[in-house]
Image (cartoon, rainbow, N blue to C red; front, side, top):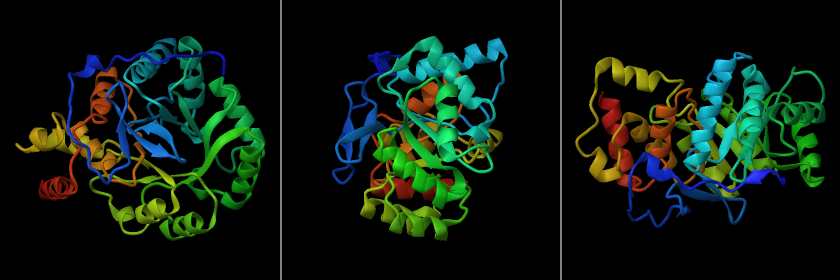
Length: 310
């Protein structure tokens, strides 16, 4: 696209340098902005913290709310963000994203991720065309089959669209731990680029089979519900639970949001987590979680055990 502008390197707004040695087994590199990236589809790279739009961007046409969400999107890109995930099931979220991109222009770092589902009205191609119009983009970086709905028909059409150069990548999604056996079969048998699934510090079932399979097949993984729909953060705040004393020294965590997100994105198989927020302050916290240092494998185990003890 000829209307993309160069991303501004302004992570200094969220803190100083957090230099540390990366885990040698993790396919992570540090971008010049200091936000960490992981490789996907060969040598392509994606920032480890993305942004979801479920609930938070379903604000209709209220001018004040539209401008507030635009400020969130603006800050996301200023801090090095890339992947933004939405769905026609999220109400007005695709339209709100389109409003923000019209106001801001389309950054070169944008990795646009959408979904098709049924019954959403129209064919796969019609759904994609409608969503492109709502986002005001010419092409999506990723189109996913939402919660495996009519996945055979959708994947066949999406694969054709990818071959035609109309979309860049294709994938499937699930959430809340649903339909993992079917999900695994699709991962093993179909040619897909991405999967999106629920993974957080209290929902770790995908560690057993799905994440190892993704690594084996070279499939990129997007983690949804990193805060379990907000319940993890709310529970901590309700109990006024402090971070463990070792959190900052061992993994650079100064907030619970960073603690929870760093646990996710430090897993070797996870390419990107997509926390959703409507507040710039919370967005800044989320983005800090994408910077070094990252927890080691042993520290990740320590983090999980500590959280289980709360």
